[in-house]
Length: 464
Image (cartoon, rainbow, N blue to C red; front, top):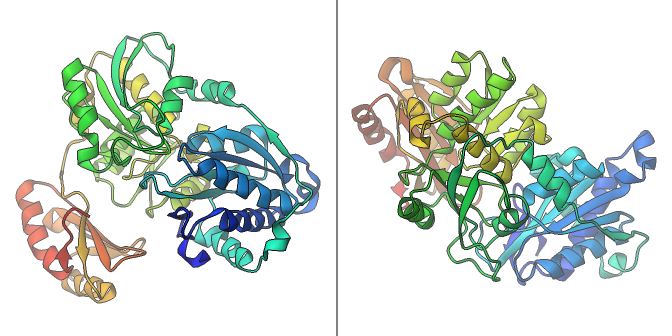
């Protein structure tokens, strides 16, 4: 059962089978054990570090799963601050604001409403994934019997931190002129952000879409899927808005469209944000995932910053942010990371920064993004193939004499200097699938490169 709910970066599965309250309680107990084992020396005696923050999203089954998780944590000896119904980025703030030993958000992010899960963080909101403790938590949970998760010495205290969270997010918000913005909250945790963080702000008029928590999503809460952005894009045109924003289910990321309703790639938005943050912190590191357009690292280099290329996934990007003291980080999936947000990602802060940049001058968002639209991208294309390793090896052999290569995450083939294109091919963790991202200097080069690369990768998976 446990093997079905633990993933590479979090716990996530359908409720109530295989993820139910009994499983949640064991995960709470195991996570509590693990977090306490991380404390050594004086830290082990620090009462605040014995606390774990627990939050939950708006899914109908989140209250009972969070309650079961809390019971498990208390049985392990941890004390709990229950911060209620929150967006995922709130948990990272709460861990650091309260000085706790870790935190757990009850959520399944952008998955359909029947899913749920847990995103576990350690001290200072360090992410806990398969390589940083999640495998240990799974192993501990598998050894626990029902009697162990009864009772316990831990205490539970309710905390309302919304006012403090609002103050924190508003440190990134500076509106110089009036803006009209469409926001699709996806009937998810973006509703609470609109109600408690972005309400009653001078110079900001919000046109809300799907801004009530109903117990279901009006549309799949994944704004990376183009059809899920259509409501935002249509409303921007209808209302003549300056910007459109769509939050995912747990509101830790958002996708933005310009005043023409055109969705902005997160790597190009990352280049714009990099320029903003490098003005504030000259020479700083900017972290980005290796699928990003070359326009991003080129922009960082041109502005005197330090581009740091990383593997896909929040666990890896957050580690690089800390390692290099990065002022900002961008991931193609829409997760954006901020040094002044404890090196963690935040959909609310991404929204605030986009508003601040747009209002700082008189240019439209499309005009601000245009300088970064330098090259032609394929977007992510998925291929079904049984022998993923063999396909990657064929790519390696084919281009070995023509391109530079590295294996940071999958295989990256860089024929930019000689042929004007590069590509990254990554294996799916869970399916017989390869994911291709390719970029070229012009459309003709992109077409030619795709015609050579794609036949090696299997059958294109339409609509995946």
